[in-house]
Structures are given as structure tokens and as C-alpha cells.
Length: 218
Image 1 (cartoon, rainbow, N blue to C red):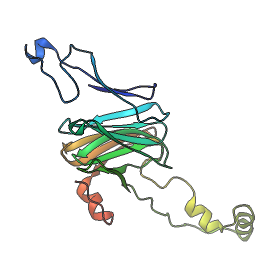
Image 2: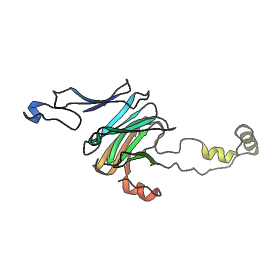
Image 3: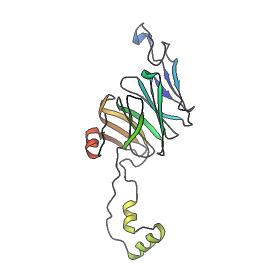
Image 4: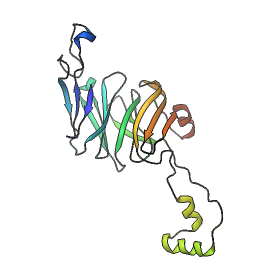
């Protein structure tokens, strides 16, 4: 089991239950055999943000987590627990999930899912936003007084102000959960997000790849 905490660390615990798993309790890639609840591994990216979400890859060899310091980290137990971290200028992520052995989908306070890639050399790179905001067309007419008032206050026309008003992303507030809804963590075909706005959105991987230039989730 993996868990993140407000002490800025991510831990892996033993989930061995003799009555369920049988009498054989063996060493794992994350640590030596232990009783249920024992801490096998502990990780910190050296930064200061409590951990919001964690996710194992399909193989169980990689663990990703996101923190409130606007960071995402991945540790590879198959490569001597080598860790990679990105801290960007994006708002913090609340959740993450593996969509393939090398692709991670994250989401949080920026209202949009974001793709990250973790390659075989344990290099972590930020990919693309998976929800491209669309500019709304202005509707209706505005008075001459309204046009001058908007130019004076916002340095833009009333038409532009109306078109730019509001949130243009699919989610209208922070996304709190990301889950695979079709396929698996090794080859996801659909994933689902839910957020503070009360919306549940199902995203089709093939549709995203066809609508966003250069996008490949693999």
C-alpha cells in the first residue's frame, strides 16, 4: 500500500495478510517481507508540500505522487529507487494516475488534466494539457457607453471582455479525483475526473489524441 502525508513524505506499507495471501510472505521490490502495516519504504523529494495523491504503475515498480508545492515525483523501485521530480509554475495537483507504464495523468487546481511522461531512463517530463480552453464568441450588442467604460477599466473592448469572461475549461473548479474508467493502468482507453464543481467528466484517450496535435498517451 502507498500513502502520502502532511509531513511531505510518501510511504509504502506491507499489505500482507496471512489469511488472504497464504502462508508465504516474501520480500518485495519495495522492501523485505514484513507484517501487515509495516513501513517498507519512505520517500521525500526534499521540498515542502504535503502529499495529495499517490499512484502505483501497472507493474508495481513505479510510484508517482503529487504535492501541494506544485510538484510531481516518481520513484522507480526497479532502478534502485531512482527518483525524478518536477516542480513547475502550475497550481498544485490533487490527484494522479498511471495511464500506461510511462504516462501519468494529473489534475488539480488548474481545472485541467495534465499529461506527464516517465521514460525508461527515469526522466520525468511535462507533456500537454488535455483540455484546451475554447474562446467563446461574443453574442448580442453593447452600447457605446459600455464600450468606452470597458476600454477605460480593462483596456479591452466590451466584446472582448464578454468573450473572455468566465472559466472556459470543461471543469469549472478544482479537480479532486482522476481514475481509469476503461482499459487499465497499462493501457488506458478512458479516464474519469471529478471536481469541486460537481462535474464528473469521462475523457476518451483516442479522441484526445486526435484533437490535440502531437499528443500520444503510451
